[in-house]
Length: 203
Image 1 (cartoon, rainbow, N blue to C red):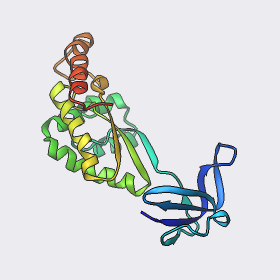
Image 2: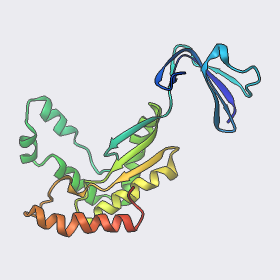
Image 3: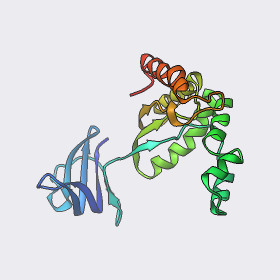
């Protein structure tokens, strides 16, 4: 990709090596590499490619969303309404909501279905300038379902122009089939983490 982007403000490193804002900024690209970032007045005259004027917009580096749960089944819109009406999180849980309601929907969904439901959420983030995502598991709460979530998360890079980093979060909550936290850690969290690492599903 060759070209030059112009904007009223550019977020980049300053001459002092600190992050800052540059008024009347420009960024030049050649063969997909940034060759210039600074004030438009200092842009080399031989910068190749088409010019794109972004007017009053801010030009920034790609954004990083460093904590997402973007892969999951179902939704909790009804709980949002309950919370707006004053219900506590404990009350929501007693009504069948919370993490365990998402766990049930996630367990019921196939890997393909989890990927398909995640992509529109990814698209919203891409439209906001996100170029890197950290995606946590944590709604499967069993080894098989946690790994299913992580496989779906890894596949997002094949479907969208975004960098994905994954984290195994099986200790997100205690699933209903367990009543002992220590036993759940020993039987699901630790061996599942080992398996996720062996399969290259976590960073």
